[in-house]
Amino acid sequence: MSDASPLSLLRLEPGANYAVPVPTADTWWYIATPEAPLNVVRGFDGLYFYVPPGLNAATIFAHAFSTGEAGRLVITDLEGAEIASLESDFNEPEALLFQAPPEGALLRLSLVAPENPGWSLDDAAVWLGPELPGLLAPTPEAAAEVERIAPQIGIETNWTPLVDFEGVDNPIGTIQWAKLVPEDATLPSYDVALSDEQAFGGEQSLRVEIRFPEAYAETGQQLKLFTLPVPGDGIGKVRLFLYGDGSGRGLRVRVRDASQEQHYFDPGPINWVGWKAVLADFEHASTAVSGGDENKRIDGPTVNVVLEIGHARSNPVQSVLYVDDIAISPRSDEAGEAR
Ligand SMILES: [Ca+2]
Ligand SMILES: [Ca+2]
Ligand SMILES: [Ca+2]
Image (cartoon, rainbow, N blue to C red; front, side, top):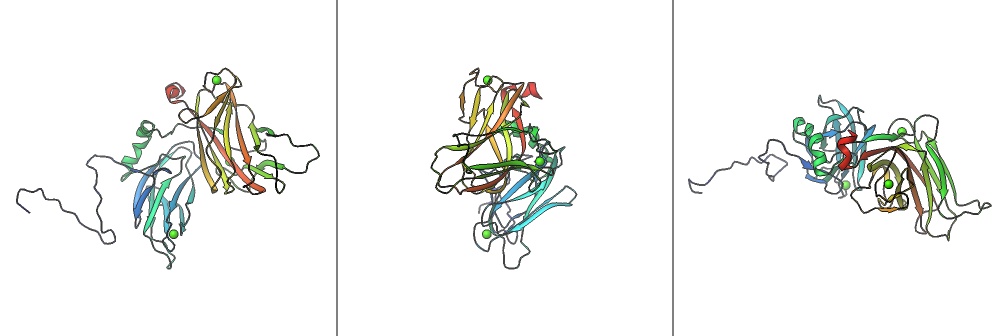
């Protein structure tokens, strides 16, 4: 090397015999979203993230697909007190569910070696649930910036809770099959009720059990759950949490606006087990609109949120699902007015 060459010193820490460039900017973030997970080798000890206000709970996922490779996710507050942890082989993506302070918070996440002596920590992917801005920061100060920068990169943080399924009154007002079911038929059947068996936030959620006969012939059958009218105007996104059963059932989120205009969003099949956020983006994604005032805007003052749960022959004959914490965010072009 000649004397004129710039000299960089890289110190290779034991257990991390590779180097990653550290940005020269004052603050920077790792992307850790469901679409773009943070892929790490041998974990990390301390990255910071921002929990927006208005969440009762939130999720962080890890996936260490190789057998024997595992890890331990640990969430602490900034003083180091543990909030939640999960040790698993993470052979399938698995969520650590934790209680979130309703006022929002800055928290610290680590992926450390598992305590199980038969497991080791090596390759793993980590991402924040879709209810959280999917950015991990090297410092609390950088994490605090996420509230400001998240909207600029399309991450919604401005949620208003609508329905939490607490209390005694069921906010589901109407339940219908899409295809007529004969009155004397015992199947298909449904049982939809408030339940304390599972909750994403609080103590209760909505339990939805549906049963079909073997070899059910009707195609395109769906169970439709309509909320009672809930306040909303200029809605951009609807978020809810659904405890999936891995059944692969179709799911559709609909909003019926005050003019009876129908807005449909298809988030894909229920192919997960456990709690997961479902995000219905009525503003940006390709959604179907029909009827009503045809202005392609979700107009208030009140709307009905509708969940449509499908059945196909490839699906099991019975499912039990849970729904919790429905929230809305305003259209981006109206967000200033709504704040
Ligand atoms: Ca594994
Ligand atoms: Ca609840
Ligand atoms: Ca409309």
